[in-house]
Length: 286
Image 1 (cartoon, rainbow, N blue to C red):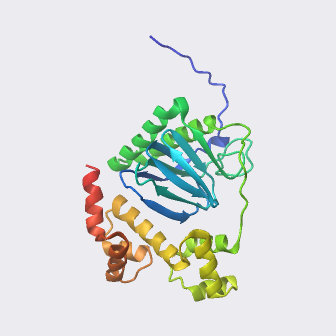
Image 2: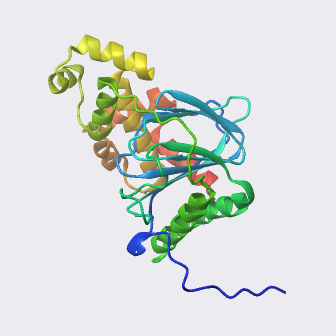
Image 3: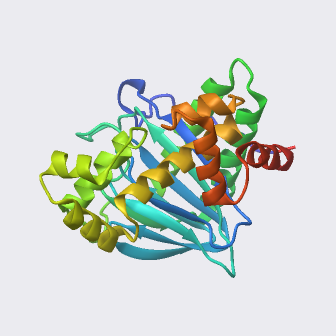
């Protein structure tokens, strides 16, 4: 038998009940060599839990291999990419939260004491973290009238548990690397649905198209235009899996006025028709 009386006088760690809201949940597994190219969250915190396998995370050009039982917290404005291991494919849950405020923190939507990133062990909280991620996933599938509200409550609990795991005095190097290549990456992340060209980027940043292309590719391993296409395809995949919107809507949503052109680009990148991709993941979720 167990009984515990809770102290109602204990202060909340969130200021004025500004609890986290969930912006996105992703679960990537059983996909050797899977990659998610460089991206950035403008106003959100990303919490990654590695349930199994391993993956290489490149964060502001610093490489880290994450393994089972580890948690990665990435704050807003931090450039990062993911590559799953080919021999031990990662089973990773990613929860993106925003619109919250911790007490004694100057900035909104900040979980870390230093606005950067932190890798920690889930430790004794691993079972709860895994359960929270899975429960949010099942709530997303149910789509009941209260699913979103419950998901937000689960996300708040998840954020609070991860916050408790963080060291109070973080011991990691703060990466402050900044360059025009990073500025271009951020710009593309905000405008990728538009018809971005090297000429346009040259006019915006007052740098020659050739220099932009060479430096961006050297920094991030992909050309600016291909990076924009990668972002379009990532959003298209998310919409195909998580909505029932028709192909024409998704095509226009990610920046392609012609659904046929969008389909051709999708097949070229993923070797799969968009609707076949949706059907594949619909079967996996049953």
